[in-house]
Image (cartoon, rainbow, N blue to C red):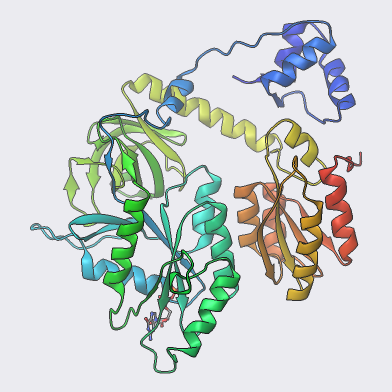
Length: 484
Ligand code: GDP
């Protein structure tokens, strides 16, 4: 367990209040149950003239978490299917694309079976499977990432040829980039008669290039595939492109390990109990395996594929529905197989207790005020900003000023710069990426305010550019101190 002020106070025989005071002198605020990292605890002990060595007892959870360590170079690494998520502006054709790909290219099998929506499905191209996550949209994508799940290998960005790059396209690009995932553009609705194939397309290429996605046809490195979910044009090309990119990235996994992966969605079904769709990342998941997923655990009673067929096992990148967990996990939570049901119960119960505690204690997120300390603690590596403003000109002016403030110690990353009010999607991105939201002459939507409060995300609003740069300048220099 981590060191807290309370345990440190007991270990040193020093009053907790005296430790808190020292911390305050170091410019940090904390509560008695706040976690301290080991170095800080040792530093505090030194302040009281004691040398502290922190030895952590191994817990069942430590053993469990070790299962997520990437496999060391092993002879068992084999290519695995890529996992794809489709993002894009509303009505540009994400759902149609998912459906059309599913219908045209579903893995054929003799037993047939009706396709089931379990959160993901597989299609086959060139005799190789490709996995599609069934929930399109960057909110779900980034909400999963906030829980530590990076399931997506490649993002397909759908852009309608009659509409071009729209606000949510810009958002989607920012979310994919923040996750460091390669992007393939599906230039969709290419069948529409009003899509002038030369001028319209070069206009959209220009918009994409402006967002940092320079099309291959223009000498850049972003594949743009022209598609239509109505005629089916380009869909095979799209799958071929995905396969090429997957090969380029040499996606591999070890199917011989005990399985680990991520929950994509879950529900409680009358009669069948807890059902969860999981995506296997490493190893092979089998009926009878003991699984911990989030703060739930259980022995797998049955596995079902995306046709609702009962199967015995599922390997890397395969989506399967499992039954047998005791509580409904949250999408984005990781699972791992262990060999001991008592240990699985112990991990799950520790987590339930911790979840209760955590909902009481305040979460530590990044603000301009605590940025400097958070960086000193190495909890964050850069100042991540989301800049929303009233007009494009404001954005350009702010970004130009911010770039001047960057220094070697405090890199400034602007994850998203866009015209418009502050939305829930911005808060989700900030939460997943430890970012601060800056609104210049724009207001947050009500739902965004509520969510920011819940998640402790800092929204700063400004009307004058030099105030933005002043605050950021002070923050990167460690000059902004909390007002108490
Ligand atoms: P989503 O909001 O991105 O999931 O978009 P949908 O898949 O729901 O599609 C929005 C609308 O665009 C629907 O009316 C679709 O029928 C239509 N649509 C989608 N793809 C195409 C296409 O390739 N060509 C044409 N003409 N219409 C399309």
